[in-house]
Amino acid sequence: MLQENLQKVSAPMFKFSDCRASVHCDLKPYEQQQAYLPKQIQSRLKRLLMVNILARIRVPFGFILAGFYFFIAHPTSLGLLLGGGLAFLGMIFRAWATGHIRKNKQLAVTGPYTFTRNPLYLGSFIIGLGFCLAGGHLLILIVFLACFILLYKPVMKAEEEHLLGLFTKEYPDYRRKVPFFFPTRWPKHGKKAIFRLELYWSNREYRVALGFACTLVVLFWKMYYS
Image 1 (cartoon, one colour):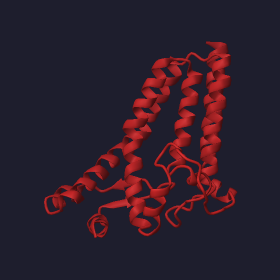
Image 2 (cartoon, helix red, strand yellow; image 1 turned 90 degrees about the vertical axis):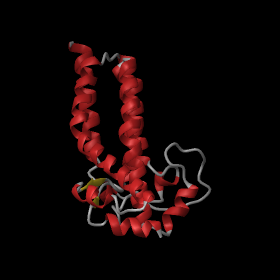
Image 3 (tube, rainbow, N blue to C red; image 1 turned 180 degrees about the vertical axis):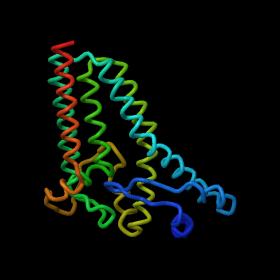
Image 4 (cartoon, helix red, strand yellow; image 1 turned 30 degrees about the horizontal axis):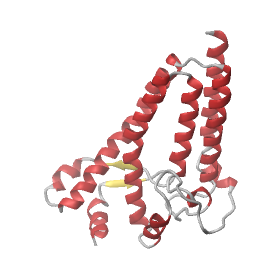
């Protein structure tokens, strides 16, 4: 009942769209209607408001972090080998996940989604750890972990609530069986599905591969010419 009320109240204010779900909202009606909502619904809307703010600052903040990273990075041959290898594994894990996603049409429960409910974010986390290692500076790792927790954890929580609204019957059972982020157990069984390359392309996951390649090029350039 609470989920139905949330959907009715938030329908004119919020629009969700992402690989599984991301949040974009019109903030003006929020202040007008907040006082008339039950406290539990108000709490959810406040969380969505915060996620909307984070979604708006992620791109410009990402450019700032990239500049900081390349400025402070001190790559070495060993660091690039180990860190680049780890980042490559994270990229493959993300690519595997995108081959099982049908945006907001079908709940993804196959492939890496049998291990974690957020394989895309886990893949991004592994990529980030890899490039922290390749960057060769402890401060990079500290900043990365802080930013990931502050920026992405609230987004993952909000996306999960959106999925609960979309898949009211399937998602509660899926959430009960599969860990939120880090895999903690081997799945006993699951639906079999083939990785579909057309989903990889339609989800534009190739952009991650391009970013991976460009980052390696810049790190190699800095190692040999700076």
